[in-house]
Image 1: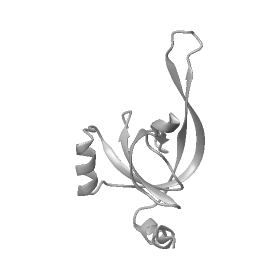
Image 2 (image 1 turned 90 degrees about the horizontal axis):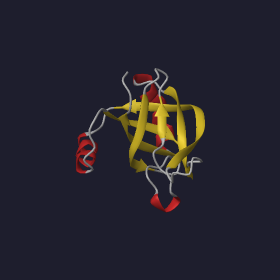
Image 3 (image 1 turned 30 degrees about the horizontal axis):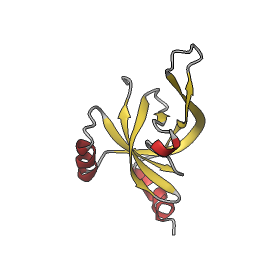
Image 4 (image 1 turned 90 degrees about the vertical axis):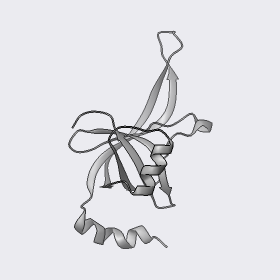
Length: 126
């Protein structure tokens, strides 16, 4: 049962969805200059409906345990977004809001078949 689909319309009346873009990590390639450094690669997914909410007290405790600092928010998005997946050599998905702010996915707080809740950290000024 897709509970998020059931309640998202009501929540959207209070806190409207925004359309952002997500750069999904596809891994790394070696820098062609031969110095051995790696360059992250991404697939851009534009116009993704997402809802930004404040972090809950438990989310803040979780992020505090990871020693993450900065401006943090949570985002609900349909689909599956991953944080760091060492086995696949991927991670560091980047979300851009309509106002131009750039956010790094720092943790996946909840992951369900149809949606996920992400912790994100601001990467630039607003």
